[in-house]
Amino acid sequence: MLLLRAGVLILPLLLSACSTPFLKDMTHAKGEQTTKTEQTDKTTEQSTQKTTEKTASNNTATKVKTFKEQKEKLDALLTTAKKQYDELRVRAGIAPDEPQVNISTLTSADAIANAEQDVIAYNKQTAAKLSALDALVEQRKNAPKRGDLLKIFIHKADISLPKGNFMTQPLIGQWVRGESRMIRLKDSILFDTKHSEDIKITYSERYQILVNGQVIGVVKPFSDKSTVPFDVNTSEDGGKIKGELDYSVVTSSQN
Image (cartoon, rainbow, N blue to C red; front, side):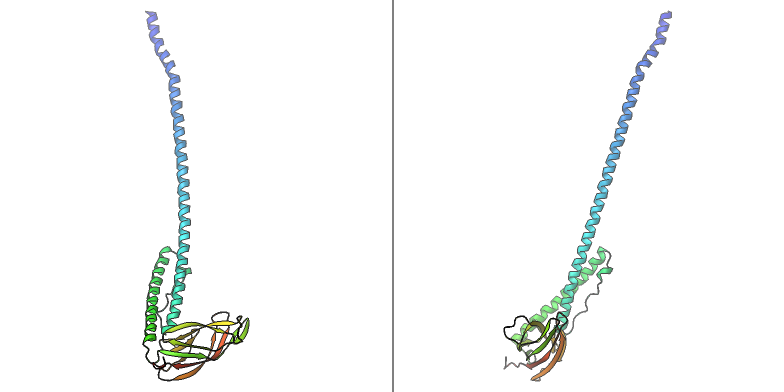
């Protein structure tokens, strides 16, 4: 009887001793698994953060590049606007005011986009006016009215440039009202190819004669001929062109 009672008392102790290492192993394994999971989560979080930062950096670089390209495109559009404004003003005597855009003050993509649309609309407007003027010039060539055709003669011109001076050969040509052409004046010394200068002569819609964009005289359609002096800047190099221009109105019988 005493042995039975002793056995009953000893059995729980034996079971407890056997289960203790197992529980410790379970706890240790669970702890290792938790640590590994935490490390994996931390690594994933760091990787995600780096990816996010890299994406943000790439997006910023792309925005900067796009912003720069937008500015360059707008600058090119403004150059076209200036060119078309000058041509229309010289040939027609009047042109719509140029868009007032200061690129340096535009600090956002939206501001540049809005300015770009305004300049594009302006360029389309002036291009349409120039196209209509070209068609009118062709019409006048084929069926001119009095004052539509002008014969121009430059006996000689004195050209002063930083690199030297020279006198030009005579020049003669015929212009249609609304037309503007670039002509090359050559040195009066034959076969001298070193000296020449381009000038732009315009006979405008308003019967004005212009040399390099400067008005030098106004044609009276019902007068036969006249002489006008001119002293204008060269297109480049800061030079001067000085001379006299003779013109005569071409009648339909002369054409």
